[in-house]
Figure 1 (cartoon, one colour):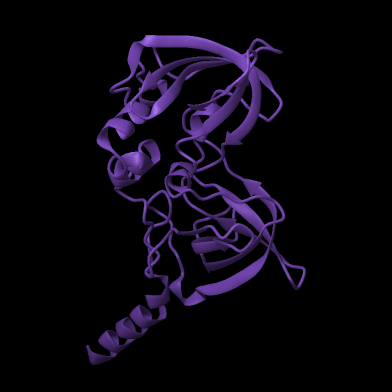
Figure 2 (figure 1 turned 135 degrees about the vertical axis):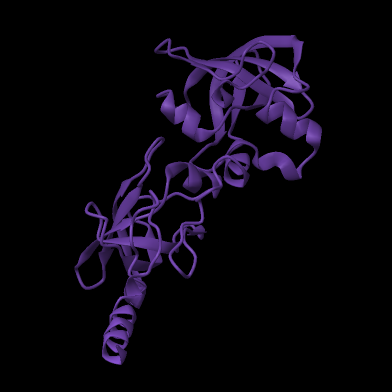
Length: 259
């Protein structure tokens, strides 16, 4: 009996490094005995709306490449994190036996080029996004302005305090943009055809990307907008060159991305 217990104990010790944590879908096993730091340059990025397992390929200094799995796209957006080809990064990673489309999973990643960083898993390998999408993380992804005034946050994220009587359309050229992955309150600065400038709040980058709509400086657009407590918010944006229209809010100012 003692011999059986000893053997069982040895087996438990041998597999202790594999107790591990649930992976992104709740079923992966992270090998904690393989946790290590890696660094290098991002050579490719697979990331976008709806992706459950965004990843990037890291080109290490020694010439090796490593496919690194991150976490759900919505979690990256909620934490204002993105990567681009050419960025220098350092990451804490570990092997995960159930992952066949990547070499390792990331515990944390720091982008040395932009200064952005994200923690994806705790020290036991447990994903930090589990159980959060309907609560804290979703709240961050849809309303990072909560620290500001209630009127302003509600105006942008839920349509409260938007004044339909102020709806108007302005056309002109895009002269400045605050736009990108993880930037929730994206804005466009428009120089109107009749002169003057106006800064208009748009919507989450992931929603614009999902609709296949892009903006760039120098582009000529027509924006249908309304006023609220925090300034102007866009109801729709039309690319006058192509006729493509991005619908962001209804005439009551309610964001279409919350449905």
